[in-house]
Length: 562
Image 1 (cartoon, rainbow, N blue to C red):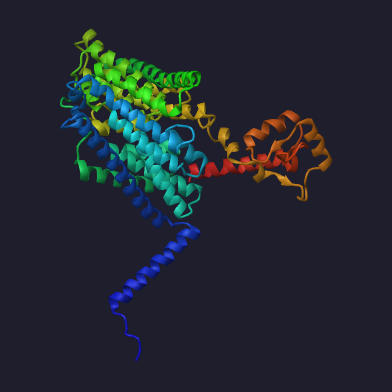
Image 2 (cartoon, one colour; image 1 turned 180 degrees about the vertical axis):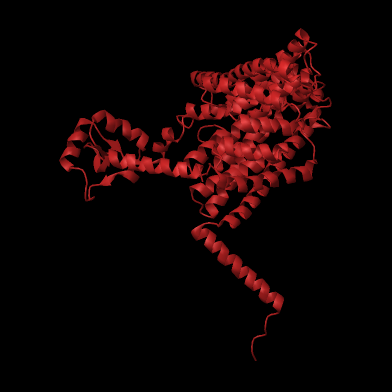
């Protein structure tokens, strides 16, 4: 008796499964086609946006339980009515938990954030650290839930990058595909966080990938739109900030005031960034001086934040209530000035304490307060020719955040999308352009690139400054069995002189040695096993290093213009 014949439906299912297996095999071995990649980009975008939504919902839930508020939009008002010891205790407990997590799961106690995503895009084919990144996400979640004075966009972006890293490893993506997937994840995360599809896509291109290649645009837009759709399904089609009055700009008369505001905001942005770096240096110096274990550093920061929050609860969390008050003109001049100063120090304490979080939301708050204070003065001096004072708050919000992020295009758009006010574009653009131009000359282009520069990662100057660091000497050197190998006797003489490079070094470390010697090659060695000289492994020729560098530059240019 023969085997029973499968039904048409069963045979169709088998054929579909077979086709899926074949398609997966092609993706794993040859990489995805354009249509397949767009589908993968959509899935990555959905995954990243769900991460952003869950992260936000989790923070709001924990804040609601800890601080007893019915609405996190009124968090600061609720905190002001709590007992002082409770306000102090919550950030302390959060700092202790953060310290325990980072001490256990990272080797340096540092929280990973947007700067590491930018580094992963430039140097590691769109990959980021996964285990340390997950620990950083957990630390930032606790920080933002318990009183840290930072924003949620930094950890959300890095968590989305971890997702894209898993996918890139799964499909064995090359550098271009990996970076594009990273851009998709970042765009979706930003879009889902702020209901800002245009800004989400441009943020990924302008800040993370740092180019506007056409081949990356379509998948990133697809992922960004997916993030927006999911945000609106959960929270509805509403903007983050509601501006009840319509801003009116007396274009020709009032524009000079926005030029001055842009310069002021650029200086405030530099003060914010340099305060963070100065406080980080000071905290590291004091920690080394007193021998404080690194796990207690966030605890100290949490204690300081709690003490400040007893008197100024406005520093707790992302600060959207205070930002909204500034945008709607519900603050007085002296309140705006004091809150700017207190917020800058609170952000510096949080960052210096290695507690985690992002700088975008704090820069929005600082910018809105700065703009409001400026607007109050400007409209008081020229009441007959001035528009609404809240318009200056809107422009200031964009100007400070654009200078901090080094992203004038995406920040201008995200301000519009956060507020829904598209009628004041010229004022915001004028302030953003001047603040970005001024701040970029006083730091290494942005907060993130300055962070990397402080770690010795030179991305701010462009590919010509960092591409040599992507090549190991061992991958470019000529072995001693090479047909055109270096002369062994010459290599031995150079080694005796101390002129050599270890095989695990990179070309950016080796090239200065070649240039200093005036030779066309230097020996490449391995560490000595005993008391003898290092072991000769080959030689690095200057022409080979330059050839590799030229190919990398050409590949980078081709990717950015494709």
